[in-house]
Amino acid sequence: MNGVFKRSMETKQKIVVFYMDGNQQITQRFIRVLKMDDTLVLAYCYYRKSVRTFKRENILSAGPTKKKVGA
Image (cartoon, rainbow, N blue to C red; front, side, top):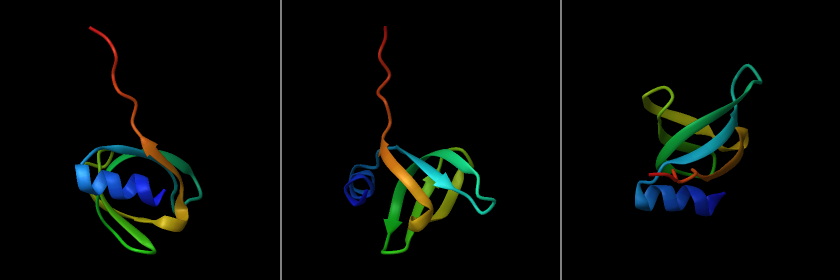
């Protein structure tokens, strides 16, 4: 996952993460990583439309978003 976060930070690309929130609910979030360290990821969250902090231990998976295909 470090590579995905680093690439998002360097290229300012949106990624998708599956995250377990404080209520133990799994949510899908589209984010753009601003900063990260060993325990936290600071990112712009497109769902909340604000900068949010995500605990790395609660991020279940991360990857690039799908490119839109069509006319």
